[in-house]
Image (cartoon, rainbow, N blue to C red):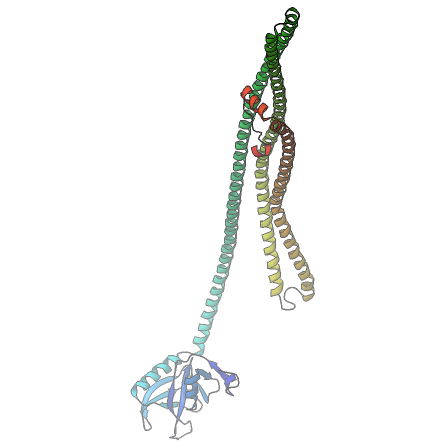
Amino acid sequence: MKMGEHSDCAFCILTRVQHSGLLLKKSFALHSTKWSKRFFIVKEGFLLYYPESEKKTFVKRGYLNIHPKGVIPLGGCVIEPAADLGQDYMIWIKNDDFINGNLSLAVENKYDQDKWVEVLREAARITWDNTRMGESIIRDLETQGLQLNKEKQSYVEKLHVETIALRDEIDKNLELERLNAALDEEKKRLENMIKEFQKEHVNMKTEYEETITAMKMVQQDKKALEDTTEMLMENLSDLEKEKKKILGNLKESEKKNTHLSQATQSLKQELQEIEEDTKFLLAEKNEIERRLKENEVRAQVLEEEKELICQHSSELLSSLNDLVAQRGLAEADLRLEVSARLEAERQLQSAHTSVQNLEGALALVDVPGDGISDSLRSKILPDVKKLRKFFEQIAEEAKIDANMPVIMKNSVYAKKAIAKRAIAQQIEQSRMEKAKTLGGLQNLDAESPLVENESTSTSGAPNLPLVSEEERL
């Protein structure tokens, strides 16, 4: 019902009634035979009657008007059906305390008469003594209900505390599982890195062995070239001796016989051939010396590469040992950090709950003189807010400290990447210098292709390809 809809809305209440309906009521005037139709309501030991028009309002809106035309207490009354005064179905309500006499009502049929008599007799049982007894029983029940509510509240609080403890335990278990998973992933990553380093170490060892084998082959080639050079030098000395001998014989033959021109000419041709052979042997000697120098340069380059490989291998072994040591330290530090972080989170959660409880208690105390005063509340609330802000700052710092190991790991990886890049640049620079040195030797080979082919066929060993340190890594 909207406000202002009816002038008596403030005097109406929504309630349940035992029975209601239209009845004929005889006037209380002495010797009067006037019957009036009224709307009667039986409500909790009272019989209320209204004008006939009140029935429509009650049926339509369901509200009980608290301003009836009359109220009759039914407690201790005698209700009897009757037939008199021109009415076949009457109801008498008798009580010695009624000032105006007994109340006479009339209905239209027997069913309504029986129904009203039953309802009125039931309501007449509500007397003052019964009401007082019922109120005492209600108070006892309310006391028992309050006691039960207190016990229920205590049980609920215990259950709440146990629930919070169980939830904290579950959160701790989840956090530990997450950290264990992170540790397992880190462990797998370290194991993969160790396997990669081991594979790289094996590869470098293989390349080192191949380099040693190549150096042995170079030494063998060098020894073979030295033997060939000695043999050529012996042949050259023999040719010189033979040349001197032939010249001596030629001079003797010229002195002895001037007629041997043809023999002299043949001897000159042989001498010319011997000189050509001598030139060829000298050229071959120069080529052997050049190849010997080239092999010495190549052996020096291989020696430098061997030193670089050994140095890089030792660095890899040291870094591998550092990683294994850091792995153990990282796991121990991570466990300590996890335990400290869990303890800090637990204390922070407890302090946060205490601050919330304190704020809630301060917000609930609104009645002056009943609890904390306004001045004391105005002093405590800023301190509570500062305390809350302090705990939030501690939580933020804890998050930053928790993220620190990742930042440190990134810095370590960045430092190692920079060191590796510097080593690669150094190797590339040395490789370029060696390429320039070998480029000059290759230009000499291009100027004398015939000598190159002959020297290759003489030595019997192919040119070894130079492999840079960067390609090996």
